[in-house]
Length: 219
Image (tube, rainbow, N blue to C red):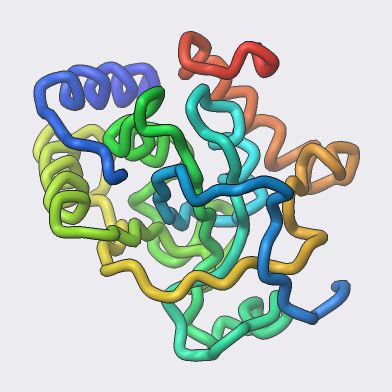
């Protein structure tokens, strides 16, 4: 099966390289979604379609402390969800992942990123269409940039996907946290149709692929 092959290839490839981890509703923008200090954690910012889907998958991984949904990459300051949904702000829906680099590495997160979504779809994921749903890796330094670039080149060369990867690689811009009601969305709204029919299958697939790397409470 395609996903099994891809996971096997990515796992083998990641094992062959090394990387030092880098140490509608209310429209008012929020500033923080966590009740505890996140300054001790490393961070990664990825866009892989709807941030509700991305958030719930990365939350499952051992070593990930907090995932905050938000917006990045556009030209509008403090954008609202309503504005981003127009596709005119330039922002992508992204997740900022706070992780313990002693338990999970940046390359581990990249591996999860490429399993989380289809990086060959341009400006969409399934029926979610628009530049706000683009596949994007926002790197914080050149080491992250080169690692992501190398992985994409290797995946393309291996024909892991039927089409070339179109994931955008860009330097980390300003991250804006999304409104409160977007945070921890699946866990709080799992019975809603989009959660049941779109997010749940993705989450279940992710759980199967990463069953040995999930938080104990998620197993």
